[in-house]
Length: 343
Image (cartoon, rainbow, N blue to C red; front, side):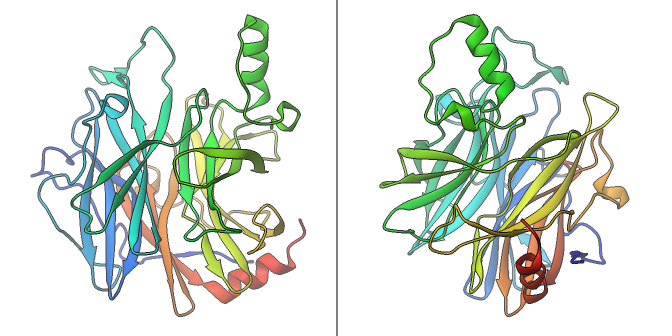
């Protein structure tokens, strides 16, 4: 059985009470190794009244001790499609450029610290940034499909078969949503075969020639237990000699309908055909167990960034939607477990 090991010092980044824009929480970071430096873009929340998220920048020499590179956010809401939040950055290097996917929220999330009930249900999109210095960003716009309420988009670090590839988690692409739309008699152009819809939101794969328009959406992984609520991509896929390593989050329901338990899982896919699964572990490799992972309503370990050095896998995750934590493991041991697991 393979389990990640937490950094013994607890969270590696906590809110700075002197910075108004992050004093309530720093979590769900994108992390990338650049030369001998680890670069982190992290989600920050400074107040709970409207719950607006911005993105900060921190750097490290050892992947453990991080120093903020700026006392101001390096990216924040400024477009019509992200005017209420810029959340959960994930970083992928493709060639000389770094691409950052982030959740863009166009409508109010909270008001006076309570969920805001607007005229329409809250739906999110995911947008894409391009940068080389992590302080100036070119916004390439929304890349998630319409009518999908889409989060957790991660890019593969190179083209496969001459095309770009991504994983995503459309919250509305499940049987429940499909039945609701059908019962209303509404017309929607589906970008997939509706017969493949899962019971709960799952992980989908898609392809693109230009990183902007994505097609051939196909369900890649679905949840398999009656207590599951959803699963979604975590880290950008990691290329190994044995296949694409996918570290993802797995969410189950609790007796409290507003609370969920988030854990970390792993699967392995073929390098030449990432729709072909090699193995999937039937258990979590990290569960929320520490006090700092269970502070809020939902126990949460939410993986969003990582890399490999020699044979060590580094996984950075949001804990309790409040802190950034680190867990590590031996890559070869994880791959061995995945290859002998039954699909």
